[in-house]
Image 1: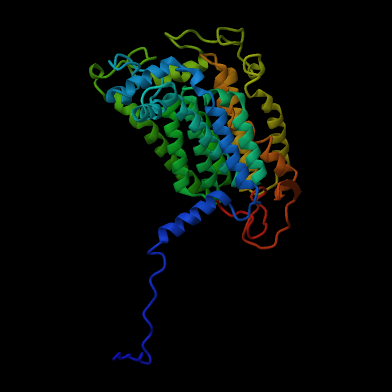
Image 2 (image 1 turned 90 degrees about the horizontal axis):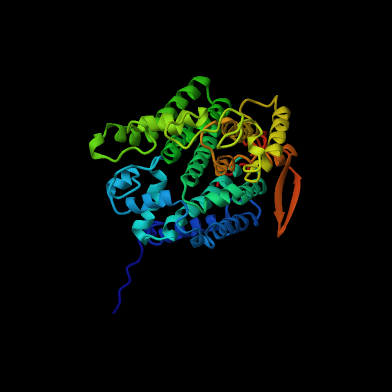
Length: 451
């Protein structure tokens, strides 16, 4: 006989299992996967597939036939071989496992390749594939950076032009330090954009950290963008001047720590128990930083190097001057983007002259246009060692004014319906409290949704 106990009145039923415990991870993973494949809810349906196709195409472009490059720059490949087999060589960037002398650059770019070789064994592929993947990552970072303030079409166009720039295609298939430098500077630009949106100290500190690690890839060249990043934040961040200056100082400290810890370690290490600092004149890392890899690149006084470029009359590295970027060696790398970029930059700045201080269009032009001008002028006037592939430092900034800023100038936004692209004026403002990703003016409630 079965007895049924009736439910007493007033006693609530047992609570259901807390949501998100069993299976929560799979649901969260599913949402993350959908977000990855779909992107922003406000984006047209074609945007995320187009981005994934761009990244996949970039990977094919940079990796296909990579083994034909052999050991690429054997100077750095030898250092990778040494660093993959000896921790001392790994830390100092020695060019040989006996730790006799280091390469003439910091070792950050070598560390990535060293780790790859330790995992996959020594081969041209294990040395060069990390460089190609850094290039794919750089294309993605440029896209998300541009997309925060501009339309998806403008961001895709900027990323595609960058990916196809001859200097980028060359250097992301090679093992020089420039690949990691460009990726880190783009991460610094992204962090600067995030910081300028709200005045965030955290993002500004990250910008300093990324630039500092860029120094560990190619020393003083990383610092060319520092005045541009700082000025962008100083002029565009929506907080008081006192807080902007204080947070810039904090970011500067973070940059110096990120860049200086390795320099301090090498300088303080007993010289008799470490390799000789390659490129220096007195076995001092500071001499390398400020001499051969620093001011010597600007004034041509590089004692012990293969010679400077001379003062405008021509030399081993060609004539200096503002036309250097358009000579036969460098003109085909990226310089074909410079005239249009400068014209559009001047036009947009003139049109936005009376905009509020925090105007994002003007801030973007300051960030990318400043990067282009400062780096371009430095490369044009440098009397020391210079190679055509150095123009990769211009590649992230070159496409920006001529793509995203052009879209902003015309006051249009990319929308999509099915496979076709259509261009229409931005929708008029409907709700207060949000701002246009292009212009900084009020727009609809979903105009600036974050990724």
